[in-house]
Image 1 (cartoon, rainbow, N blue to C red):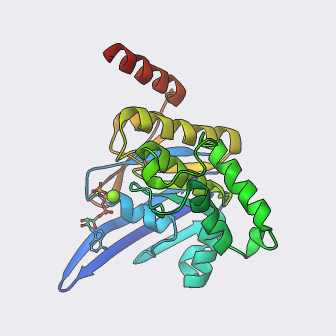
Image 2: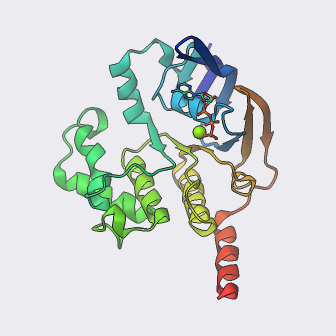
Length: 257
Ligand SMILES: Nc1ncnc2c1ncn2[C@@H]1O[C@H](COP(=O)(O)OP(=O)(O)OP(=O)(O)O)[C@@H](O)[C@H]1O
Ligand SMILES: [Mg+2]
């Protein structure tokens, strides 16, 4: 019986078949995420973090188990229905940004809005789309970079464009697979500050994977995976504030100069 939680997976397994060999990426994972949570997922390489995120993000289907997203039984949906629910509920952010290279920040953010012409985007004019894309870029602090192409932006800025692109779709949940993995500590702190702000001010539920314990301590809950199983699920007593972390990082870098 599904309850009010936004995400609920029960006894999810994922087995990849590689010829005669089977890889058990997830061996029975159950997790419940309530609306408004900010949580991080940690675990060694190969423990199944990306596999789980892809399933949570409806980018992949589990081999067995149940998934309720906002009380909808996702395991029963076909590909079209899955794409639909993904578009209206989930924003996905990848480690490698995944922006279109010869396309400005604004166009990168606008593109999914153009392709998504059903549901809440139905009848939205080009002007409104542009406005929404601009607002999303302003929200991540890139109001002055809208006409830059990815190669004219820093890694941290590119990741912020990717977040704005997800944000423009007004998702209930943001899922991010190692969003700070390719970034230095300053850009990483900036990204975490944005996630904290989206969570606090817009009530967006945020789940991200990180290898960095210092990054994880900015969330309110840390889930640990090992060998395809959840081995720990802990509350963080006093989550760190990323703006404070950022100020510290900036102060240290001026000292170095
Ligand atoms: N498409 C695939 N086909 C076959 N095996 C896969 C596939 N994707 C992942 N695996 C295997 O499943 C296991 C879990 O992989 P996964 O990518 O989820 O780990 P991860 O925790 O995200 O690791 P990392 O920290 O390195 O990103 C690994 O053993 C991996 O080799
Ligand atoms: Mg991974």
